[in-house]
Length: 287
Image (cartoon, rainbow, N blue to C red; front, top):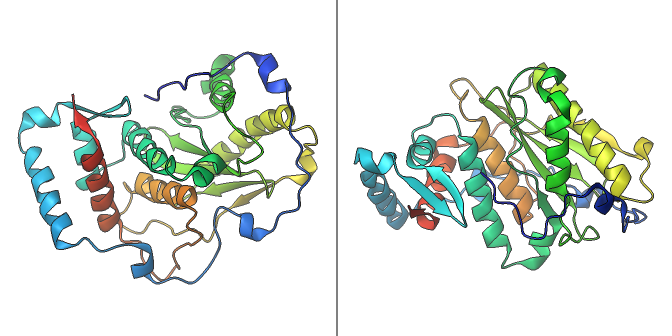
């Protein structure tokens, strides 16, 4: 699903060279999120008349069943038309949609070098296909993670966040945020589940191995794990929306939007779904 970046070097010895120091003092303002009181209208722009008209045109294109069966592409990331339509129709989020939308986010960040350089995306890992450690026979998942994290073009002096989407049983999405400067592993999950927490900690252990090799002054006891309990939780009838919650979190972090929703302000999932659908359709080409 994700194109391998040019210049990736998967040799183990690459990770042991040029180890970086973590000796600067940072504060809570360096966090991926900052808890502030915000109004819903500050977080979500309302679809204007022109956007609604465009959305109607996009929806009409999918009335042709041949269009639904087509593949769509952006920056060589491909996705089935049906999966894009599923976003608008309130269905579970396809992994290819996750990769496609994050690629669109990354493309926008390229225009803002300071934002792009501070975020590292590790996509297409697709964890938790089956339950427990038995699914990772031979350490394939761990090796894949390490390979995705190693790119000689990355400037690890400026990277602040590593974003790792996690998926359980092809259904539930949650996000692992590695906050480099704060030395924290943050679990962003819109549906509290014991299985999700266990899966998060399993990936934390793998990230510790990477950090130990990457940073010369890495000390495990200085790092902490935290569950973002203040992150909005899915309500009744929103069981298929975890991917949408996660994409919104990724977008906020990537764009430096230091805000979260208040618990008493429900997340307007339908509006976010519409805007994500619109953004994808404006950027992709039918192939």
